[in-house]
Length: 338
Image (tube, rainbow, N blue to C red; front, top):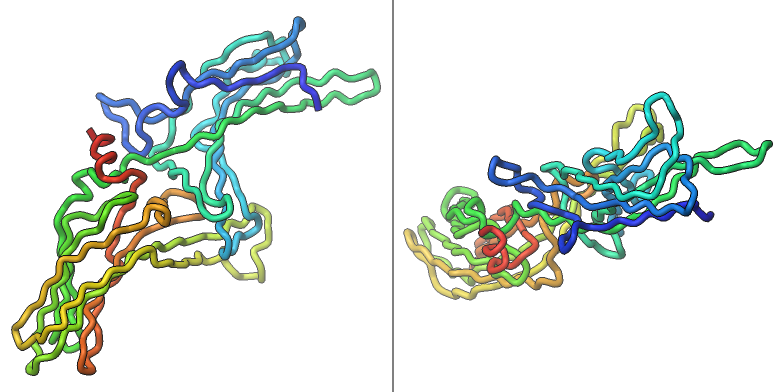
């Protein structure tokens, strides 16, 4: 269908559409994040009858393969407010629209989810959309309609509150777990809880024994696990199954991104303790980012550490040690934080 006008989206000169730092709250010294630019409306020699010109941000979520998708594999919703750039005067449904440029400024919510590219084109993505509602010309016996023409540009949202260089993610902490009976204690100490692509996860694992007899500690093992949780969405008015059942339950799946082992092969007696400094490199091509605030998809990262014993003594392990994964390696994250 041909339209009597042409729309274009333009970013500010020499700048991207997204201004500010998504994920970072505004302050007196720093404006909040926003999407801004210009909608260019180009019309022929004669004006057209129009109702409104708008700009909006749409977030699309597509559930990755292997997860239940509810009533639709891809859903979308508006992010922030729909900005009306021009409208017919009050009391009139239509008015003449001439060629013009309309500037827009759409603030981004503080809880906006980051863009994430998952398998087979799924994940979270955003579009900036400009739209024009106009009155279509028709004959005497043809009912007038109000078509809407649209143009869109993909935009990529990066959250800056997950950079590993922030002090929040660089606090030393220690966690411990005891075996049944309390004879063995596994302690994990780490200098921080955040990292990015190509970074290495560093921590110290220690095993202390209060067993009356010595035993052999074979070594320590660790794994970084990515946990993806999908909450299937049911469209309003859609039937959710049998009568009396509530909304679909979230479904979680995990995958191991990296593993490392540290051999000890030494005997540990009563009161003895063995310690290993662990270094876990994470392949950048396997890594996404921590994803929160999305409607149907969440991604988190956890570390599991295990002490492997010999002589019939059960292994002792600690899991669900949380990490926040940002979009940049530490060196680039430090530059962004500055």
